[in-house]
Image (cartoon, rainbow, N blue to C red; front, side, top):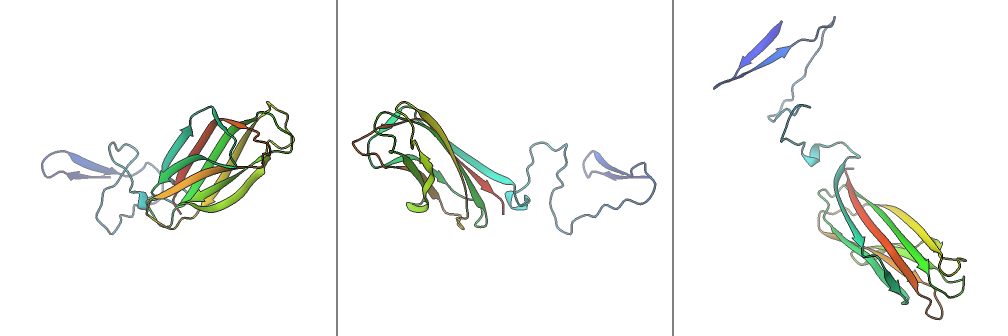
Length: 184
């Protein structure tokens, strides 16, 4: 048996039972709102209603290729981000390609990750470029899950620290910083 609800101006909605034995229960919420179905168009679930682990937003930046540095510390990328909830986590995904251009094989790079200018991860990585010959390229990736506990704008910065003696340049090619807000 079907139930037909006739619209106040036009149209109708039909509730039809499934063709199975037994009893099926549909429990309606005790609050006003809109039912979103798989056939809905132009509607979205509010971010606050998404389950834990959902990706709420993504921002990403890629730095210009061909960046050379001789300095002891250099900012590779900075990305601003505003969480939608104070309970959200921020998953940071960083990667870069770097080449040693001369010098001794004892020179290397560590990277650090900063939130609003304060270091949250220092000397990250396993000494990129260590014991590599001149001209050798390496690809490094780093992942960090942050709990910023704020809905204010945050600035995340990816910094490289060099141990180079004698001004050994490290050539950076592709650098990427991607931030994902995760519902917690």
